[in-house]
Length: 378
Image (cartoon, rainbow, N blue to C red):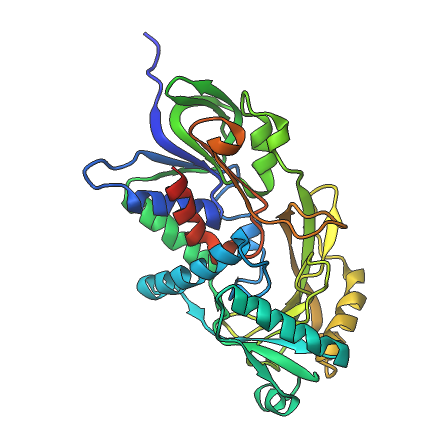
């Protein structure tokens, strides 16, 4: 007699911070009288080993994104949820505040535009700072003016993910690592999912709902879903961001950001403090054709030039390569702004399938709001 196929209500593919937040939210929202049987799969050795562990760990305020965009809505809602969750679960965080600095006179108008855009998005706590006020706050920063965001913060992302997984498992969710999805077939009760484990051993199961939160692997997973037209899968652009660390005591008390590049590809090489008080600079922006996490030593010249615009006292001998992350961008090198994409049956026509593409920054900040969004779409 053949083994009975195991059945799940929901399967989330991808155990980064977004996949974990989705799973946690779905389990929280399920009625206690009818708990969900939920499975999370990830191809890596553990959770959060790609984009989620290679970023600035910043809780963004929702300043830059176009009014009405998912990035704007989910960032602002997610910020509130994330601060609340961190307080409730004793996750290390600090609302350290951010200064967006104009180093040239022609950038001052950009600060006004950013403030207006933020206000249109519902962010009302930004304050324009004069040169004199800036020098009191950050005596080592050179700028002609700045915009202060008091609700921008930093968080220990590993602690956050570990707590999300703890909550998931407490509610009966199951996490399985080192497991690749090889194919997804339509089934009268949802989907038949075929996987391959660490040693190549095959395993298949049935799931009523499938959530593609695979980040850098989301497009590849979509290609392996039976009956899903490639027209609904946006092109992935691998966008690498490297970071350099600064040895010694931090010269800053806040996060320091330049006025962002008009292309919107990134927020510029900024100064971020971690919870231990150490400074890292980054990320830069470099589009790739394949995954590459090497920090090129030759990019140090680019970093020095960018940093010295707002921190002229930089001692370049204290600048050392730290790490690199890769954003799963939908915006190509010459493209206009691209929003998060969260697809349901309305878009692709397959009941029970939700797909997330292009969940780059502010994905960390937005994670719990993305969980709410997915829950509402189910």
